[in-house]
Image (cartoon, rainbow, N blue to C red):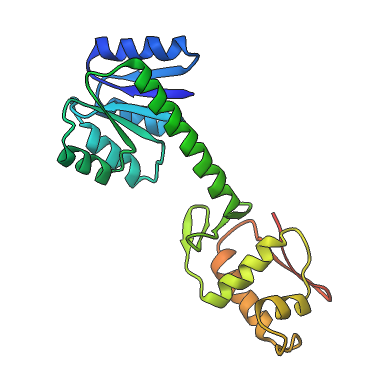
Length: 226
């Protein structure tokens, strides 16, 4: 694992670093919340270990800043305050787990391993529920569509049509197939309804984009291509 330690107590940070490196993990250290935030934004870590009380930016504020930017790296918070109220504050900020000081290094290692395993599983599940064509993404769980990170609002029928195209990316789908899968058996594929909805999608997805994704294949149908 690649782990970021954000801890202002130098001796504790060094102790954790030594133990993690002895277990073949890569470690970066920041000694205050602002430095930790900069490292977290500039690098990819598997897990972050942070203290609650730190100079410049405390652990809760650092976590909230990361979550506000959709940075979902698991965070284990070290704290001398293990009350229910303290934990409630932390969980509300987006912290994943707590470890109360003093602690055994073995417990820290077990918790970090568990957080990483859980995060890896969630990422795998997320990828299974994500359709992607170039920089266009469709989350099948949340039903959110984005291109280049920008949210695209779709009607229910537009969403269904786009989903069908994306599931068949880089392939040509005929008007008959679209009518059958997106509408119903009574839909006349010769009507201009399909063309109208394709144009709706083009305006929302390709308008202003240098790289166009939705293509009309004359005499054959439509295709969304990377």
